[in-house]
Image 1 (cartoon, helix red, strand yellow):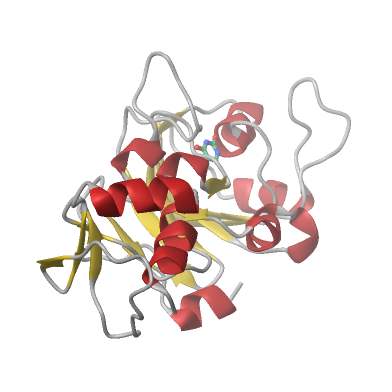
Image 2: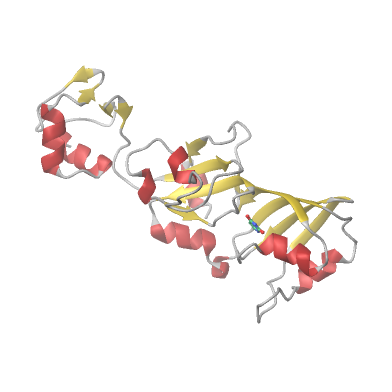
Length: 229
Ligand code: URA
């Protein structure tokens, strides 16, 4: 592929801008400054813009370990967004697949592939989202059946879809949902007169939060993880 085509597709800049960047010496090929837009490059070549490696053109699929205090939104005037943690060109245009509250931690999937994002979030696809919950009051055994039957949440007309509640200790449980209503886990516990003290998402479908990621870090999904959705 020609260098200017690669640059335009992987960075999102126009060919005209790409030529300007080349002229300004902002592009390196395997560590050497390059200025010729017609250069032919191969898959093994490392192309950087201002020292930052550019991904080959194509869809992007990432997992991110969301810390508290960050919002799952493309733009926010008061909090940093999860997308601001991603050091890639045009990261602000990526789609966040299923949002977490500002005080929730854990797995967030981010992609440029709108159809894939829809499969992650649409209840029709029944992709299980698994949360670890700590509550203010003890969790009674009969909550398991209530989660399974579905609960009426405040100001809603339809019961929640069957959810799995696994009680881990008096104040701790693992919840699996296949839908993603606003503050759903917190409101389900509120419907039982309890309160969620902390919430952490462990997995989405077969995709587990990578234990090697630190809070705020992200990595590309493997092909197998992408295909699992
Ligand atoms: N349910 C909630 O209440 N909050 C989240 O962040 C995710 C699910």
